[in-house]
Length: 304
Length: 171
Image (cartoon, rainbow over the protein chains, first blue to last red):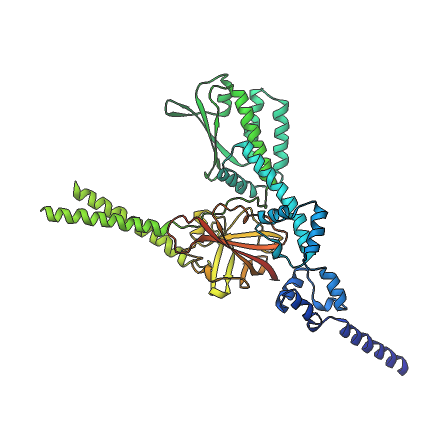
């Protein structure tokens, strides 16, 4: 029995010491890290991204294999061939996302980024093309995307259903009016419709509008969220058939809504927020007003 | 008549200085509310250890949010997620010292999901219309933007951008 205990203990000690010896230490990989210009901290942060530590590798060779080759001209050449890109195209692609080849140390990461950015670039192009065809301003699109972001996820299916109804029931005013209501309900928008004639704005409902066959006045539609914040304005073209104009408007809004659902949580190279506060400039205007007031008071005193 | 104008200008001047001075003071003293109210959409804090600064983060980047603290771009990723989480702030209030933050400095975002430590990898100065900042990223990234130059009064034509990578998470 005692022999057995001794044997098992020795085996455990041996396994433990083997395990301890097997783990790669910083000192083993330091020369290699120096070659690529990395500090111990850089390596630790990099490993953390992949939920790894040096202790997960048995040998320095295994660790190097996991890292893959560093970025070299030959490696970039192979990558260009794989994705059928020229060097200028690769630089332009990374540049679209604010990066350069020099931002990468390892070929594996550069490869993954190129794959990701090629997909993202296609997506961004689709969004920009759709927005230009809809003739929305960038601010309007941004407000709609921000608004839709907070809506329930099933909205896209509902919009698709309304799009089918619109195609099936074309030129039927009752269907068009109902699709309009459902569309607003799904997107949680309020629409204020006005007929603009000789400078006056007369409120009108979608149904009332669709009951007219032709018109000479402009129709202006203001879309706001349920708290009253303006999302966008739409204008129906003058002297066109009301039904056709409404079909066109509904189609546009359905397309924009579906696009907004696709855009949930993604960026598409939009403009950055205006982070210039107006306070200092406004205070200076305030000081200018006080100065003018002072001059007026002063002149009055002199006049007396 | 002249007296009337003088009083009118005085009133406008005092109102402009008073209201904007108060808004500016609010930004300068942006503090994290001790309790999160239903109206205040505070969803976290941004700590910049180098500046010994803790700022509240609000959802949205309109003037209403930027007046109170740092705004999170709603279409961007949430802190800690794979993708690009974008935070913006006024250059003359909450981010008036952001120019002192450089490569290798930490930015810590804390939300109900945990504490996310990012390290600045890149500092960029770009045009206000640059389309390469609010873009998707293949890894958890934090992008912090503000106007540039910092001393400019009015709408600056450039943006100061910090790009940071996630380096650790504490739940």
